[in-house]
Amino acid sequence: MKIITSENHRHLQAEIENLIHNFNETGDMLVDGKRNKLKLFELKGIKVNVKSFKIPNAVNKIAYRFVRKSKAERSFKYAEYLLSKKVGTPQPIAYVEETTAFSFLRSFYLSEQLSYDLTYREIDLNKSGHEAILRAFTRFIFELHEKEIEFLDNSPGNTLIRLNEGNPKFFLVDLNRMNFKALNFSERMKNFSRLTQEKEVVRIMANEYAKQIDKNEEEVFEAMWFYIRKFQESFVRKKAFKKKFKL
Image (cartoon, rainbow, N blue to C red; front, top):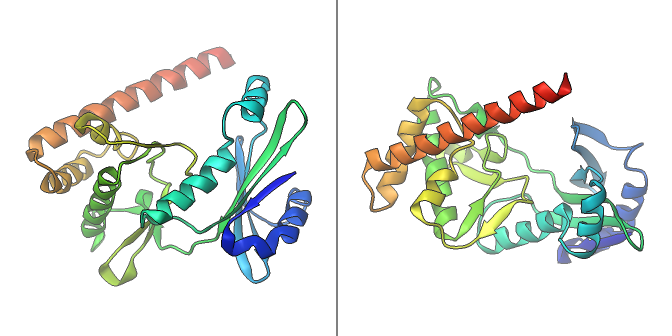
């Protein structure tokens, strides 16, 4: 078993090893997904969020063993990088990998449990103050882009929001898919494609993003809406394909 901890959590090495050995039998389940599981533990007074990644298929067992970095390792290293860039994310604690000589097995990413008030999914323009939160979120995404960070899983549940007395703070989770590069306008607009299908919400995001860059609001809106429609069409096709082959 390979355990890599952050500098501030090296004292938890033995506890982390014991946690992983007993992962299935202990801890409080937060998400019991088909691909990944999330559980909550307490280690020496620290609430720890543990993401257990699904054992990969036969091809990826070899790839993750010898070629590619695991999802757990990427999550850990990307979290450290985000914090170095002053981008919010739960404090990384460790990542763990179980392997054999020729194959990759289980992997885990451990971070400190973060309290929050809502996610992007709960933003509701009918509620007082939520338009301001949406605009602040849009500025947060713009700042990511300016820092050359492309958060590929920019979906409704993957940004945690602390209201912070009218000055919202944002924290990214589910970090294993990211690019770090200068983003052109199309790439920036495509990065909004997973968030919503609500035109009014897109109008507000386009208005706020346009204030940050040298583009007019309608151009920003049309580009955002184009990629949102494109993503939704692709999603529907994939869903229909899976349904067809399940029959």
